[in-house]
Image (cartoon, rainbow, N blue to C red):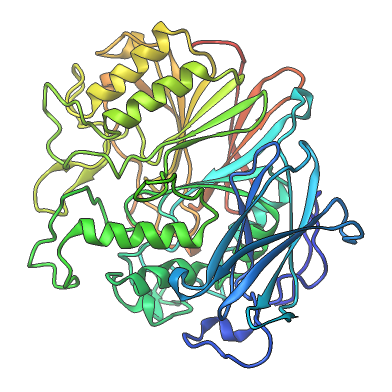
Amino acid sequence: MAFRPLPGRRSLLKGSLAVSAGLALPAFTRSGRPTAEWGVQTGDVTRDSALVWVRSDRPARMIVETSATESFRDVRRMRGPLIGPGTDFTGTTRLRGLPPGEQIHYRVLLADPDDPRRTSAPVTGAFRTVPDRRRDGVRFVWSGDLAGQGWGINPEFGGYRIFDAMARLDPDFFLFSGDTVYADGPIAASAELPDGSLWRNITTEEKSKVAESLAEFRGAFRYNLLDEHLRRFNARVPSIVQWDDHEVRNNWYPGQRIADTDTRYTEKSVDVLAARARRAFGEYFPMPTPRPGAREGRVHRVVRQGPLLDVFVLDMRTYRNANSPGDQTVDPQGILGREQLDWLKRELARSRAVWKVIAADMPIGLVVPDTTEGRPHVEAVAQGDPGAPLGRELQIAELLRFIKHRRITGTVWLTADVHHTSAQHYQPARAAFGDFEPFWEFVSGPLNAGAFPATELDATFGPERVWVKAPTTANVSPAGGYQFFGEVDIDGGSGELTVRLREMDGTVLFRKTLQPGLVGQ
């Protein structure tokens, strides 16, 4: 399918994302020049920096050129890493010293290490750095859950066309709220739909089974980049990415052992699988590099988006305790771990942004059960008991109490995970635990996965489901609808934050405007 530029300030050079059929092949040709047919991505863009990602078909030197114009008349060149098989031929370069609040055009070239004159055709993209001025406003989109339940890239359906709908809004960035791949979800050639027709997937060898080896995890991340809509979106919309369970395995937690009865896995240590998945995750997204001496880069971080917005990206996987009935009266580790909770408190207290978006990869008051080990355990925070906080709820209660007593304004929770879209308002007057200020939690997704009925609410923090759209049956395919994303628009003049929950084609389903400067609302 030919590339058609979408409207908006991030128009790209014609033909920049043309992709060959060779994308689907596991082997790489070594003749000619390097190629970058998997597109480009940018991530964690700030007022003066950005991360740029590319994948080569062979060892190559990554080179990034930037310019204020599409013509690239005045070019600034950055020499990036030498990329090779150690990172599955992926590379990320951090751009520094960028002007704030400006449109940046960039192009990535791959140079032959033995002959730097032999370079790939340039692959271009664009992004806007974070403005210093409040009046410029902020707009972003969020969602999660891509290629789940066996619903992969179906060209007859139009592929991952939801990314075109998000791009049309011309957002400043995309918050990818976890389940960025389904490493535990094989993609078969076809699946039968309720009307008897077939859903036909693009397939690859790595996605024919659950991911266990590093190569298979890499293949799971690479699979999504076969979609032209996603590649086009990546080139024009920066991302802020977090992970959840399906990057590794459904409902995983540290220290877990896979039962011998689950014959899909020969590797039974989830910690081994998680380490491989985390490596592939860091290779296939433009993520911050590890700190000196650190084992790996942290997923949890603050990405500052100017005077109006700080995004607090949580990692509700790496530090959690084991899934259980969730009825503990003491639970210091919880779902975040003590170190991450203390970090979040410090950063929230330090933030001077008007709005503080808490990007959670799992919801707070929605009961998400875990029966993978044959017992009725809790996968998220809420455990179904409407009384005082128990289990992981204790940690969330501590956080909510802290926000109230430190009078931290403008907190909003965004999440995905549950494969429907909804808006919950949390109110202490309705809650068993009342030492917090009211807040909103907005849920979106899936992007391209099975849709599921709305989950039960837990009354501990007094949630009211103000609005919801979900199917009444489980695992509705993308062809059946119920694919969603959310939009957040912060007005630079009034400071008002408006959330719109949207369908796959961009239709607005629900809208809520919040006022700035309040501890709770």
